[in-house]
Every structure is written in C-alpha cells, then in structure tokens.
Length: 283
DNA sequence: CTGGTCTCCTGATCGC
DNA sequence: TGCGATCAGGAGACCA
Image (cartoon, rainbow, N blue to C red):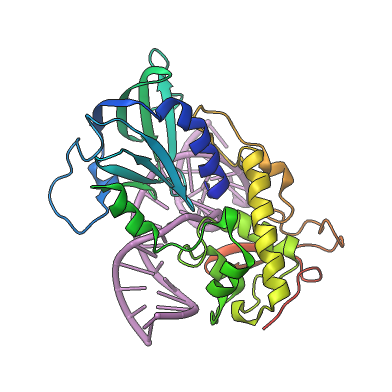
C-alpha cells in the first residue's frame, strides 16, 4: 500500500546509497513489468535501464519515484500495491527473493550492492524515459504534489468536479499522492464526508482540507510511512503510522471523536470508512 | 472533455 | 489440517 509518505520515506532512505552510484549491470527477470514511457517502440535495452550510467539524483511526484541521470536515460518506478525497492549490500541477502523482476548491480557511495525491484502482484512497474525532460513532460500531467498542495491549487483542481470528494482526491491527475488510507484519514480530520460533491466545497472548507492533507502526509512521512502487511523502506525497516489511523480499517469501531460506530461504504470502488456524525456532507 | 466501471495480480485471512 | 472464497487496492483501459 505505498502512498506518498511511503515513497517519500523510501526516497530518503535510498538517496544516500544510490546518488552517485554507477550502474554496472542490470538483470531483468520479467520484461512485462518494464514499459517505455514514450511512444517509441522496440526492445528495451539494459542501457535504457541505466546500465553504464551514474545515478545523479532521485525525484518523487505523488506516488512515483524516479532514478535520474544527468544526460542519459532515467527511470520512473511505480510500486503499485505490493511493490518494494530495496538496496542489498554485497554479501547480504534479500529476505524474500521471489517476485524480484529487476536487479541493478551498483557501485555506490555506500559500497557495492544490488538494488532489487520486487512486486508480487505486479500492479507496479518501471517506465523508461530517454531523458529527464521526457519524464517531466509526463509528470506535468499529474496534479500538484499532495505534500505541498496549497489551498489555491486545490481550489483550482476541484472546481467544476461533479463527483464525490474522495473520488477526486484519489485521482492522481487532480492531486498526486493521496491513496485510500490517507484519503479517509484526511477527510475525517477535515470533518468532510467522502460523498461531498467536490465542486460544492466553499473556500474555507478547501483551505482546511489542503492544510489537513499536508499535515497528515507530513506526519506519516515523519513516522516512516504506514505499516500494513509487509511494507518496508529501502533498508527493510517497517513504518509505524498504522497505530495513528483513526478511520482506515476501523469500520464498526467507535469514532475517536463522538464514539458512534464508524460506517463502511464504497466510493470509487474503494472501501471507505467515515463517521456520519462528525463528517459534514455538502453538495 | 467528464466520470463511472472493469481489470490486472498474489497473498493473507476466514469459514467450514 | 486443508481448501475454496473473499478481500486488499493503484491506475490504466474502456465506455457512456
């Protein structure tokens, strides 16, 4: 379940070992998780996957993580539902080595090792781009990053959206980085019902929502992300945000504000938990 | 253009 | 203890 906080935390844990690392080689186990981000056709080569390049920086937009090189190709990695990206120092072994679809042999600032992309359910994937510019063109189509979204940006993005507020928040083209967990948590804290019509919110409500989204995500980043099932960061350490969930996964349990049982419903095909008395419905 | 629904996939969990 | 059913959900494809 990696959402923005998990990816941001992953980025921070991987930066010290990846930035400045030379990619000695790439081993692909499943080609069908690797895609071309541009319209180009043809077989994807190890050069496309950064072989022979040096990683100069990492970047994140929403839930997507990119490995960048200065003048060569770059990679955009989505973890989907079950994806993991892990650096394994030379001599160490990956805890679970099944479903590893791609490995990069690296010689980096923290020594030699392997970067492994593991994704049992294969909802994630790797997209190759010929340059940073090509990737950025793709990222421009995403909404503003949720970690820093302003009231003004959110107002513009929600204007005219005649759909449930939660569905809008989950749409990465509207706002990038909010997934099912943080959508429910943010809506609860903002006191807004998931079925509010997005366009019906007033200025004050949108300002509060933007502020709550930023604060919720910031808190989760600081906690190292949510741990559900086997999420782990780039070093294999778990996050601890799950203990702070107030609605996600708590259907039927008492609301932490009013004590009434939390309701479960389906919005945009996703399980949604909310409090009917504490979350205001508009529109 | 918009918004709604379907679909991909494996592993954890639950009822019998 | 085994086994089938169910659920989890990110995001692109597809349709009205």
